Amino acid sequence: MKEILEILQADGRLTPRQIATMLNRDEAEVAATIKDMEEKKIILGYFTLINWDKVKGERVSAIIEVKLSPQREVGFDAIAERIYRFPEVGSVRLMSGSYDLSVMINGRTLQEVAYFVSNKLATIENVISTCTHFVLKTYKYHGTILDDAEEDRRLVVTP
Image (cartoon, rainbow, N blue to C red; front, side):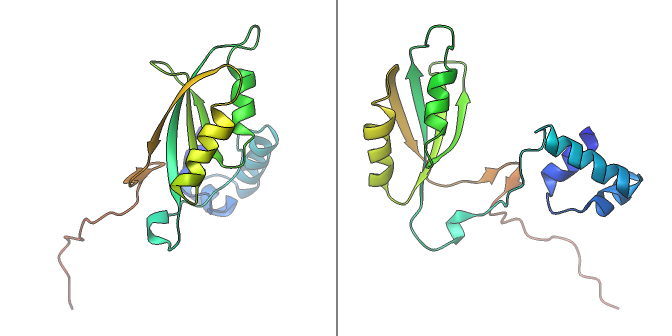
């Protein structure tokens, strides 16, 4: 199971047949394992990794550190749920260290992100403070180098 997950994480476009070939397993067994993992919500979805720096149009990403006062009996979970339900929020993670949640959001403009922080996030009860960091450039994401400038240094072989 773990081998299939690692292969799919690297390339979610691979078919059960291709994965079965890579692992020297039966295609039907691989397809059944993938379906089982989807039903058990081990596999939650498939996505395409996009280098947004190469796409025309405005796009702003920000990482927001959020300090919270935990709620009785639910801790940080209820507040985290309230935050991750906003459509502009890409991820929410509980962190150790000087702040409690790391919130990643995407917007079209700086003003849109600022509006989200000041009018939606900071006004939630139990939010003590926020610190917003705008993403200037992404070099590597999900293990993939986005703009690899390394040249192919292999010798050209001519017949």
